[in-house]
Length: 75
Image 1 (cartoon, rainbow, N blue to C red):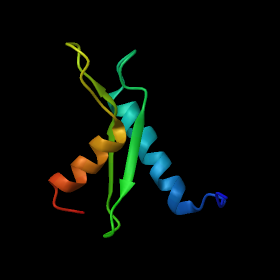
Image 2 (tube, one colour):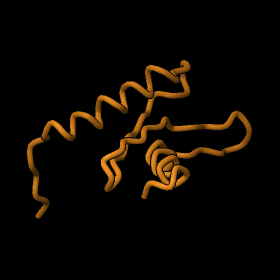
Image 3 (cartoon, rainbow, N blue to C red):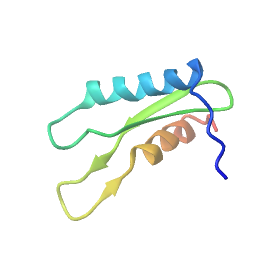
């Protein structure tokens, strides 16, 4: 059975960062999904879902946020 716990303040920080990255990068019909991850060091990396105009290339926001943290050497 899945254990469900209430959100804590630290969780709301990730939600807020996801909202901020959507607001900063929003383009109608393109960037409506955001994600944020917190690394072991406590840094937060956020990103938006990306879709290319050519073909079927898409990268989810979660993968983009994780990629940002890895690119910065913070994993």
